[in-house]
Amino acid sequence: MSVPFWLMSVAINGWLLFVVTRKVAPRTLLRRAIIVAVASPVCLVAVILAVAATGVDPSGNFGTPLFQLFFATQILMLVTIAHMIFRGMIETVTDFHRQYNSANLHRFPVSFLIRHPRQLALFAACLWFGGGALMLYGVWFDFRI
Image (cartoon, rainbow, N blue to C red; front, side, top):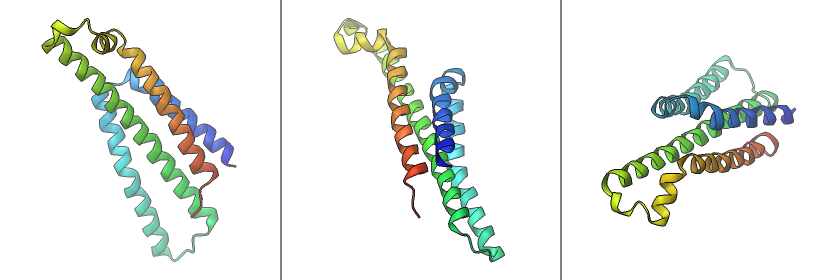
């Protein structure tokens, strides 16, 4: 049962990192990801309180998948937020050097950053994707309450 959920989570991770981050404005996506990252614990607490208020004894069949889904959502949003912050850092450093450091644009680290911002963002997205896939593997296969 964990394999389809892990594959779906990894696919969503890739979709968020490689498709959505390119199509949606960075500030809009960052704002939405932060809202989801904050709202999902609130929803989890609401579900826990509702289960406690009804007096139902949550078994492992209900509790573990709920927490797995919660942690998978948190991982997806935090990886997306980290990628958006990294993209913002690339844009900020590039703009700074173009505006205030134009005399040194030919030097190695600056020239590489100015010439290859998309490749750096894609490389970072690949790293975030791999790390997210490993974290999601831990959530869906090795999770114990």
